[in-house]
Image 1 (cartoon, rainbow, N blue to C red):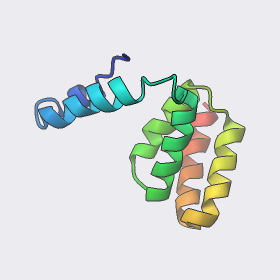
Image 2 (image 1 turned 45 degrees about the vertical axis):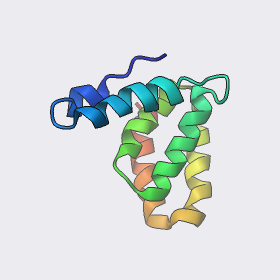
Image 3 (image 1 turned 90 degrees about the vertical axis):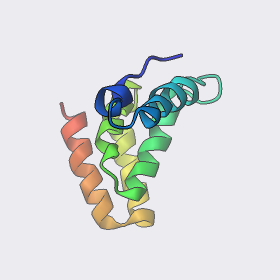
Image 4 (image 1 turned 180 degrees about the horizontal axis):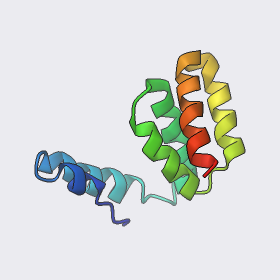
Length: 104
C-alpha cells in the first residue's frame, strides 16, 4: 500500500472523510493494484481522463505521470490524439502544462 498524504495535508481538517478516501482508498488501494495496471498505465489513463474534463488536477497528474515513467513523446501523442475527441482548447491548455512539466 502506497502512502499518500496530499488529501490529509490539503483537506484533512476541512473535509476529513474526503481526505481519507483520497489517500487511503484511491491512492492507497486503487493505485496500488499494480498487478492489474502499472502506475505508468494508470497515469496515462488518468491524464487522459482529466484532459478530457479540463480540470486543474491535470497538472498534478502530469507530474505523477512523469515520475511513473511516461515520456514527453508519449504525453504529446496522448494530447494530440485526444484533441480531436475533447476539443482544441483543452489540448492547448494541456500542452502548456505538459511543456512546463516535461521540459523541466
